[in-house]
Length: 109
Image 1: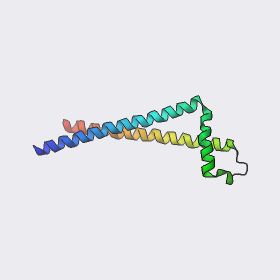
Image 2: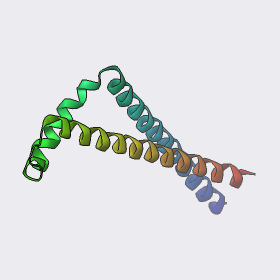
Image 3: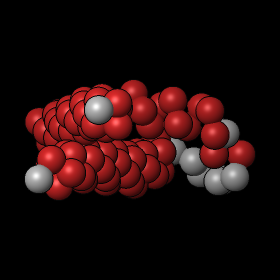
């Protein structure tokens, strides 16, 4: 009796955690898509990140003719990689959430 009760409680916690992971994964993927769409609509919006990146990394000390163009090019590469990482993290969290839900369903039967 107490074994099935504790099993049900742990199963419900696993299900709730699965739903939370799926929600965070969808949120991460949605954020990546929203930001990528914003860059598609206004490619010059990367200039804020490029300026911040240019100032914080002090890349001008390493390049003789460090212009804004170099910062923009590097910023596009960095932002693209960050969006890919965000998308992959969203995929991993959704996959983990679905696996938790599958475990819950397999123990029910």
